[in-house]
Structure formats: structure tokens, C-alpha cells
Image 1 (cartoon, rainbow over the protein chains, first blue to last red):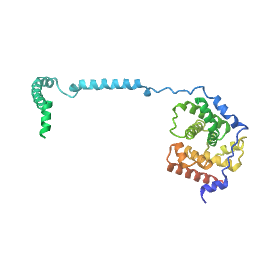
Image 2: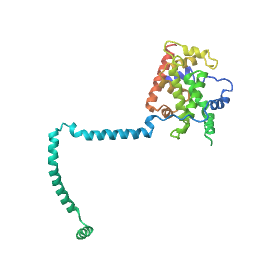
Image 3: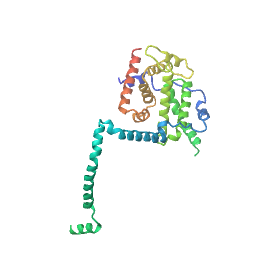
Image 4: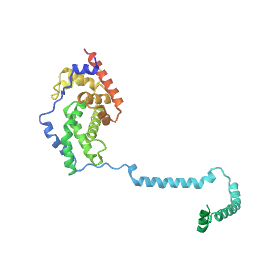
Length: 121
Length: 165
């Protein structure tokens, strides 16, 4: 036999619980009487406050900035290498400056040149 | 409509239904009344945050069932039982607000021995004949898991009775 049917036949589904006379008649009034006038607002957790996220962002920026500033010394670069780099850098800057000038010249097409180019193609 | 009056009409509409859901879990009238008051207090405090994501009856039932199960956990000696005692059945038979016979008290004893989810699913399905889809929304559990829980609950209750026949 189906086990659910077994329970139904043995016990049935009648509600055997009772309540005091008139309980449901007064229930709404009783519930409303026990409620505060206004709902109690739950205090926001610190994690819900915008100031928490603002402070966390500032801290993250400071940590990232400090890590970036100290990075050359932290990666094992010696002071001599840093000096050597400082000597080499102006030459590199000159080379890269020339390259940039050429690139800028190359890119500096005025409007007439663009129109001419478009008309030709 | 004024918020408090709106809530009062909700209390009027759902309090009896919620009372019976709670009563079947906590078993005594006084405890059911206390849990019902707490349920509406929680609902009132959360009323501003209820934006109709679910039906209001589902929202209230969810609070009621959680409050009932919390109550049982806080008062482990009440409303729950081990397999070798008949304290729940004996208490019910001595309760003025229980007019069931011995077999009906035994059924409550058997249900009281079940784990929380099986117990709740059995009460909602067997007595209220609630659909699995509705129970699923109430307990936030898949229908498959609920069917398995109900099946296990029915099996355990059947074994409980057969072992005492």
C-alpha cells in the first residue's frame, strides 16, 4: 500500500488542535496593539555606508601609489643601475623625441590634404 | 491608504492561516500565539522593504515558518522529540487545546522526531495540501529536494506506526 495512504487511513487529516473561544475574533486587535507606532528601522551596517567605500577607495589608492613609488628599489635594482639609467635616459629621450617629431609631421595633415586624399580615392 | 491601516488589513486577512501554519510546528496554543506576534512584528519592521517581489502571503509564511523553527531551536525540549520517548504525544493528550485521539497525538509525536525541513514539508503538504511549487518558494528549496524530503518523512512516519502496531 502507498505509505501516504497508510497514514491517511490510520490517522486521517483532521485538525486536532483547538484555540480558546473567540481567539480569532480578537487576534487582529491583539497583534496591532503589540506593534510599535512606526516600523523599527534597522541600523545600516558599516559596510552599507557610502563613507566606508570612499575611505576604502582612498586607502587603496594610497597603497597602490606607495607600491608604485617604491617599485624600482623593491625589484632588486641597484643604485648604480639607477644612475646608469639616469645617464642613458637623456639620449633615449632625444631619440624618442626625434621619432615623435617625425610621427607628428607624418600625422599632421591639414583639412585640405585630407579632402584631396579622399577625392583621389 | 495609511501604512498602519494597510498592515492591519493584512493582519486581518492572513493571521488565521499563519496561526495554523505556526501551530502545527510549535504544537501548543500559547507558543503559537507568541510566535505569531513575533512574526507580525518582524513583518511590520520589514514592511517598508517589501516591494512585492513575492506574494504577500508567501512573504508572511516564510517569516512565520522561520520564526517557528527558530523557536523550536531555542526551546529544544519543546515540540521536538527523540525516538525513544513519547513526551510530545503525552503533552498533547494533556493539553486543553488538543482534542485529538491517541493516534493523532502519535502522528504529532512521529512528526516531532523529523528534522526541520522534513517536518515542515510534511505539515505543509499533508495537512495543508500545499503545492510543491508554493512550498519551494516558501523554503527556497528545489521542488525535487522537497519531494525527496516529503517521501522520506512519510516513510519514517509509516515505520514509526508499524513499529508500534
